[in-house]
Image 1 (spheres, each protein chain N blue to C red):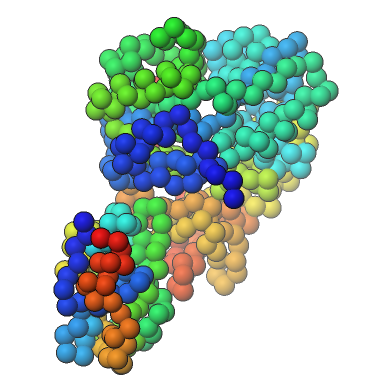
Image 2 (image 1 turned 60 degrees about the vertical axis):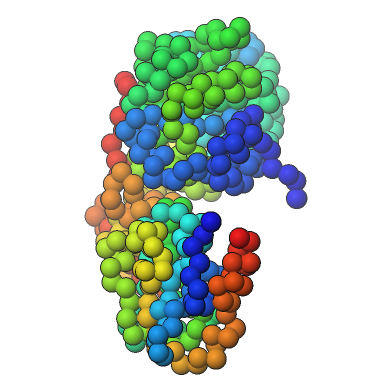
Length: 363
Length: 126
């Protein structure tokens, strides 16, 4: 088996005594203290995550905008510089290649941020589609490290500790700026439901910023709480809520699929699913018991299996046992009484909205 | 350094049995609760259920994962620790004080197949 990759902060994680575990081909920190402490630091104050495993691809050339619009579900046409879009790359049948962010750097200059576990697949996919367009595809994952500074005090932490002023950025915008003699990217984005920033820079700069933040007492946070935080605010994780078999329409993320922007890969399949209703849909479940519905557990309506759990937790900010599940569309109506098979027992649950906890973004 | 109590019997899946008469108190070791992290749910059998040595009788769930509970001994469940239903985190506070089920042992010779404190200490590498 191939050895797992390491981020540029690997040694720092070991020094901090992190529990390390394989994730998406990388040895990543799951937790430094415990998931609850780290989760609450982000909800209430500020925490820092090493997300250097994420991939980066820059698309330039005369047809860069046209090309990205063709492989991406959201509409980037004539977007102002500094704006960020969330959306998906799809297969022709509507299944999801990946969900990603697209940063509008300049006219015909777009910076794509993709999931770590999909880097090889995505880069191959992008290159394959790019053959028909006048564009240059530059894979930059080996250059960039990335930090996510998240929580209500993140703007202050950036300013006080890193001397980075993010106050002029609103949610889903970014700027390039000079830091320590290099150009870095600072965006007001994140995956926690809280206000926060993501910083893309060289490995040396990422190490320096990490050290400063840790020395200033910012809580280091692992992938464990990254998952509980994103889950509570209803954000999908590729591999669980979006897969090659799960389209964004099924995942109820149709708002990021701009069917009227012109042709793009997967458009017709999504249009059909939207019109006719997809066979499956992603729903929220609230269990009446404390038992926890984990990924892969069966969801039942009466005796009949109608789907499976994609993610489930005992909420940390919301004191309930909650889950996302992909179920037959008719079974997934809000308020329906379903049940989840957990080991040998069956536990009743109700279909609820997927946003279990309110997001606090700086709009 | 995990807490290990003399006089208890330990299994390779990190459950312990404390024996009083023909009753076994079954729980998870301090090492196990530490490895699991914050326990948020304990799935327990019901009184009068039969448990068998080497077989699953429930689960302990932390935020991140579910871990099966494997019974170190065979017998009949005579009591479950109801305090864990409301406060599963008690397992983290003191996993020996906060046993999970009490079992009436059907075969005391099974205890001989388990580890004593010294052997368990070596088993977890401490």
